[in-house]
Amino acid sequence: MTIWITLGAIAILLFISAFLSGSETALTAASRARLHAKALKGSKNAKIVEQLLNAKERLLGTLLLGNNLVNILASALATSVLISIFGDSGVIYATLIMTLAVVIFAEVLPKTWAINQPDNFALNVAPIIRPLTILFTPFTIAVQAIVRLFLALFGIKSDDIRSGFTGLEEIRGTVDLLHSEGEVIKSDRDMLGGILNIKDLEVFDVMVHRTKIIALDAELPTEQIINQVLKSPYTRMPLFKGDTDNIIGILHAKDVLRALIKAKGDIEKINIEKIASKPWFVPDTTPLEAQLNGFLKGKSHFALVVDEYGEVQGLITLEDILEEIVGDISDEHDDVLEGITKQLDGSFIIDGSLPIRDVNRSLEWNLPEDEATTIAGLVIHEAKTIPNKAQQFTFHNFRFKIIEKIGNRITKLAISPIKKN
Image (cartoon, rainbow, N blue to C red; front, top):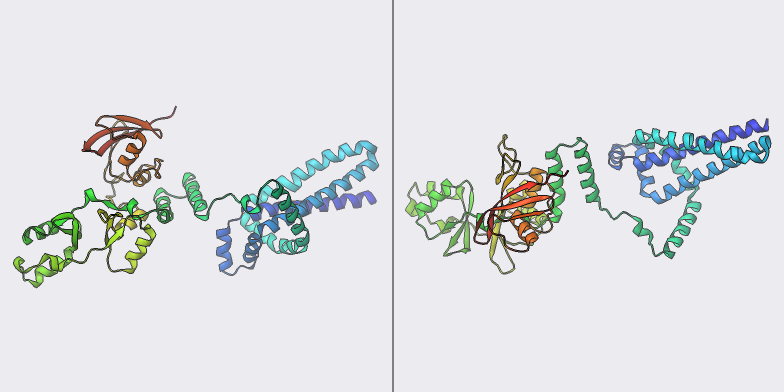
């Protein structure tokens, strides 16, 4: 009778071990985002799970301590039973039998069950685990103190145990993983990536470079200026006087049309400088997020970018920042953004002024974005010289060939990925 009671106790201990093992797996694998959403909807169990995860070190300490306690006790009972039956050789039998029992029934089985439905498992076990963590608090605190003491001997602080990843990096990694598994489409991945990247970008990274700015000369005849405004695809255009760096205003197409109506079509009555709005100058080091907030709070959606010496480097609009998030707006039949042309041999003719970030996003490449802003800048950085036309370079698993060059400026390149064997 005593043997059967002992075997029953072993079975109960193995069940408790299985429960604690499954709980550990479920609580650590459950989606905090989904559980937080359930908690906001009023789920009591979800709130308990959140409380447990907020004290994860104490939670894991309780589960591991409880698990080891019942496993050791079950092994000890099994050893005593088998020794009474087989003598000293019972120790070997107990070791083999309990190892198989613990691995199969107290580890693999419950953890496999928990990992297949971690959220539901965590919600169901949370009300039971919570009082256990309270009960084991004195023991877990003591264990944590001993662990910290030993870590300190090796010069490791408990705060250094964290992986070092930030929340934003975890989100980026999750989005990329889901995209690779086909659960997030490319456009959604790019949009989420654009939102996350805004915090790391400056106005200089997104601006339209000065070489691409279409500006109006205030000293030209009024009729000629108006014709340029009407023919331009842009609604806002910088107005300069004398030198292109001397921007005196921003001319809006609507203001020109209002002036024409007010003057009843008499162009001579229109004073271009008076209808132009005051230009807004921002430093090229302005964080992109701050500039976005500035655009949203202010009435202007257009700003000129200047360097530390006050020289105009480019311009930025609200649309430029929004496109950084949603991507370039293009024709529904376009495969790549403007400035990229695919060749029959698989290579691409790319405008040297295109941002590396846009090329990576469009072609799903992985060219480094921290060494230069544009494709031409990346080539110059890697070559450590200003290349000549027809020169070729190979780096980052891509082959670059200079197709067109104006002065020291690389305007077109042929780029082809190097196929790995």
